[in-house]
Image (cartoon, rainbow, N blue to C red; front, side, top):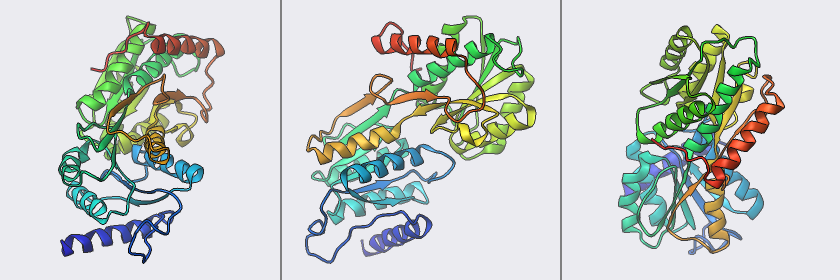
Length: 343
């Protein structure tokens, strides 16, 4: 246990050095919470870490917003491996310093189920995955609904030739990080949205095999473009940077994911599908502040602010009539008139 504590301390120090914004609230009082005026939160990211406009960055935005609104303090840690995640979870829980420990990503589920089963009095939040334990509140987003929106956008933009780079190929593309149920929610929604706008559209789909491999993503994007795809959407984490590079080199249009990625290449990124894990993290902390925490699974879609899309920051202009049509599609999804598949 002492070795584990030393390892966690090293990880926290590494995070503090790498990320100056880390907030720590550890005092010398025998009651670790005595010197704090508000809740103290811990957040553990996936091994992919921060950077690359990933969902880790998005979750951190929600925590920072809660810090501004509620005066909470927080510690953030970027594990170097999946094995480190369980060690960090265990040490945070055993310290009894945290009112809530937030774990990001499906890769932490097994470790969290082990740790939370031991520390039943510790409250956890799990983002972008689910757990059935009573002391774990799970927050997931209906990625398929946001992807449906950008799938429809891609086809409508292509049909109206809003940009000189768009052709009559009737082909668009989707690049996923890995072939798993979570990423396939993006693929299913994108394909369904495209088919809703035009049943004859062809959607090319391929997977990088990881979330930090821009070289492979670039190769897939180039192949798609050679096959006639003028607009390509990705859900591949940092691998998506390879898509954007290919779009600039080959002069086609792309769609970002999770965060607003439009500013990365505003002449080549038309829109970004938003998977708003920031709202998930914020809602989890709000439940602590307002004392409404329950260990339940919560699924947030368009109706709940869990997903959306944005064209802000792009230099590619979307005509008002297309935006109006997308507003109608949004309303139909929220009302249940349009049922979006998740697989």
